[in-house]
Length: 206
Length: 79
Image 1 (cartoon, rainbow over the protein chains, first blue to last red):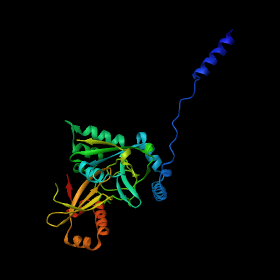
Image 2: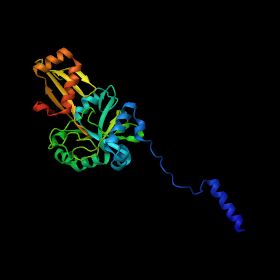
Image 3: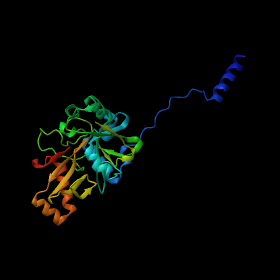
Image 4: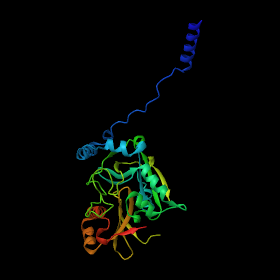
């Protein structure tokens, strides 16, 4: 009798799809370098060798929760160079691609949220949080966010030859480029290639 | 309505303008994770170089401004 009940219960579980299974494990994303074209892949390999034992994979895993990136842009620049031109990609574009510096979304969002006062951001507070001069944040801003895995964009450590790099000339400068994956203000950063405008979330920061 | 004529708008994130007086101005997006815009008025030498070389010179000048946004004190922040 007991055996009959056990068999019946087993049949019910199998036919109802209630057989216990292991929790679904999200697939491991493919190596970031595989998303890059030959030129960018070469730059990424060289940057990783230079930063060794650090690498873009370790950098993203350690510093970019959810593998999301964000960046800020003054609204005047956003309107002139993204909206009016109907740009397809963010960043500075040349024959080899469009180059964009980006930081962890958690860092940018927290800095923006903590700078908000009476419905507007405080450039001093935001600048201090991101280790950059307050004047970079005056006026209305746009905050962009991109999911690295959903978009499948090429991401690597930034290097001195990237378009837009401000080369440091004195130790006192706080908004110039230093190799290693961190801004001179200590915020993690990556170089994103061909970040699609259509797949980015764009929010106004009053 | 702007009194300035756009001579060049580059995907490198700069544009070259001519104001009512005929002077050339360059607006360049500078910065990394936080991008802003600066404006530089071209001097006589740079204006002549643009007349000779066109966009090749403008590209070089824009890259020079991106690499040193204060540009020797000549750059003015665009609000």
